[in-house]
Length: 461
Image (cartoon, rainbow, N blue to C red; front, side, top):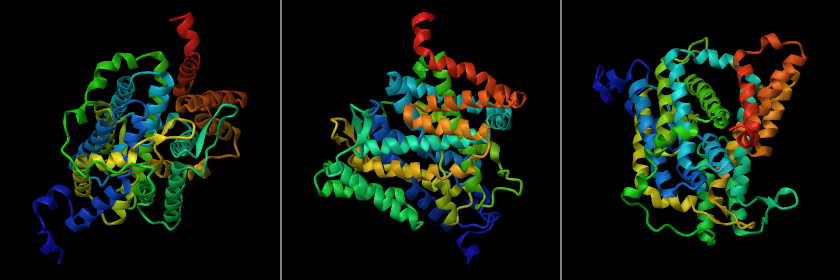
């Protein structure tokens, strides 16, 4: 029956090694569709986050779909891996809230930082220095960065839902949970949480759709102006602008931020490809991924593509595991997923419905329909906490400062710096300074300059 479906030695079989990996075009198509449905929430969330930092919503929506399509299809054709890519949650938060809003820089400068981070990753992959960078940063810090960013994203989600608001006395406080936006956000969160507890795929997307439907029904959100439309010139207005601002991004004060982007993107990719590649049979007994070099090369180039299109860093998605669970084993599934992202370009009106902003209780603009996805991403990232060794001060203290520092300072770079500096201090106090990697020593003055940026600007530069 399988040979009737796909003649051995056919074009698709030769191109994607379908027979060798024990799969069929039907399995790959189902896997690609499953991956798209599981990760399509980024089409709604990314424009809402970046538009809060001043980028045009429709242009980011089109750019998000286009960047995901190009990079995912490239992953399928050149790496023959069932991995899909799109703008990364956490990475877009760094750009929007840390670089653009936090430092009051233009969005092209923020995207220029993304391009530089991607070029740095490309150089390391080409030079074969991936393992050296991985060894330099303690595992506890890598895990803590993921947890801290998860809490940061969850906080952003609670604020976008109007569940948490600014408070003049305490800085932050509980919103009015009887108002419309918090109610629809809470409903979406509860639906996502319930489905996730039942291990049902697409729980994040379901929460978004429930919140959107309730918001539309009860008049919190406006209905769409149309279902679909052809893209026009303004939908591509963010493409290419960042390259003219590379010089603005190459400053000492932004070095720690670029490093934070690089760390988040680089290590997240390593964990993702191993986690998804293992059930796909692409990882050997020693934990090495088959054909890892082209995978890492495309992932690094994808960051450059994301910055170029003005949609933040594009990275490999762990949601690709949904496609693998449906039988995807080759890059044909990625081609299917990428093709579906191409179709999404024509449905900007529906994307705008989900990501629209409404007035919050504290007079800020919020997007309650995307809050469920952000809160649930925070939950998913929090689950790696047990991997941190809390019995050793060298691991526990820096990890704690990273996890607490990122959301409490509302700065991913600042939180990571707390961890890096405290790690070096604790290791020295414990008499283990010889074990500190030279890269960690080099980061300390960079983060100190980052913290003293205001003083340096006034008195030195």
